[in-house]
Image (cartoon, rainbow over all chains, first blue to last red):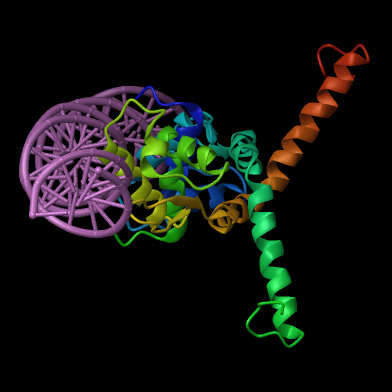
Length: 115
Length: 115
DNA sequence: CTTTTATTTAACCGGACGGTTGACAACGGT
DNA sequence: ACCGTTGTCAACCGTCCGGTTAAATAAAAG
């Protein structure tokens, strides 16, 4: 273990099943059975995925009788977004270059040389 | 293999060494030796990290003589940011609730009951 | 042509990951 | 008190991951 929080979040998000679970939790709390229903996968497998998400801080879990509902913990995702934000200027710049190129060829300069 | 592109990107970002490499590439292209210099790690290890980043589309590589410089491929990161964007409203809402709570206790309602 | 520099490939290793099955714990209903 | 429901724990399995070292490749330099 001993991984830093950001790595844990990225690792947790690097699995389509876990991302689908997060998407489902956008509609509100859900039990393990509810969450497992769409997947062709055993219940313990889903339980493990939930534990990964919980350790990454992306979800939290409650206790109601024998149910342990999971809910979204959105501020954790904000941490990821904040990290990404440092790179925004790079993809903005890329997009601007692409945009300029597209406008150029539309003006009848198909080679984009500008001459 | 056979992993979807988004999972590949998240997995690539889930390693502090690879994130450090990306940060370094913000300052411009760099050779493998340049990139390896800050790390207590063999050269093949760094080469493998670069391959992971390349397969995820986060970087691309050129050929200049015996050097194979790596450069940032920022639009790939935008793909990740776009996925995250779906969740923004959730952490915005969380932040608003926190904000309201902080304003409340500042007005002399330390229990935050509002009564 | 040989040497040097830059990088990748191959083979290997330990540990983490994603899944399984089977046993077990916790609780509500009857 | 028992049963069904809900969920986790433990052990296991095959694969992937992050690292190593040693050898191979590519191209420049002497």
